[in-house]
Length: 125
Image 1: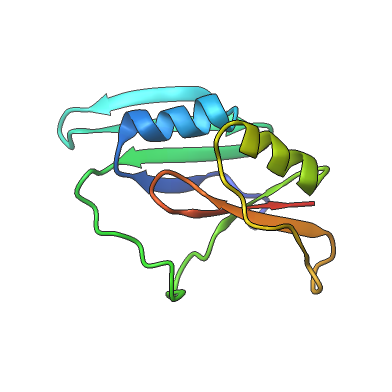
Image 2: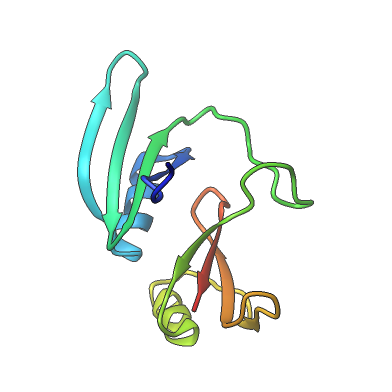
């Protein structure tokens, strides 16, 4: 019944800052960008390969607790060919990454970074 992931929705606080991060720094392309007058926000669909993100702009949304970890979505992971090369690519764009470590459960190497609102994102090979 469930065949694949359709999209991941992310609530961001600053439309221009998040659009710059996901489009200009991570390389996502805009599929659709709609200003919703009744909600006073943008709904923006982005794509990179098979990954589709849906950004909602909500400047007054409550902060997401990430430390200590809270129930719910923990992070969003992107598959890459080479974690070190992908981390270096992010670093060259001004995006700080954590030290690369081995995933002893799933195999491969991984590292974490954060979007402009602090959402934890992962690179995993």
